[in-house]
Image (cartoon, rainbow, N blue to C red; front, side, top):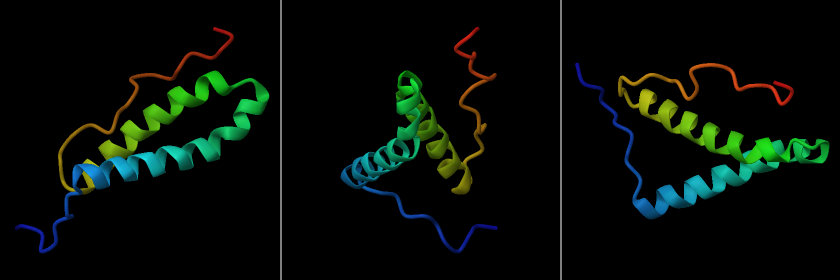
Length: 79
């Protein structure tokens, strides 16, 4: 049975704008970490979260893909 509603796909321009806005919001949320010397990790975390959000969106639309960005925990700075 097909769904009665399909999510509309965004144009490339709309997608780029949404990605820019999302990246800015994640940066704003994680920005306090920069004050504690964690800034080097923030940019990488933002990119990984964007990949996760994209995969989540694909799953919501019914695409059968794994919701995995990392296979294991990131190493701690002391490791």
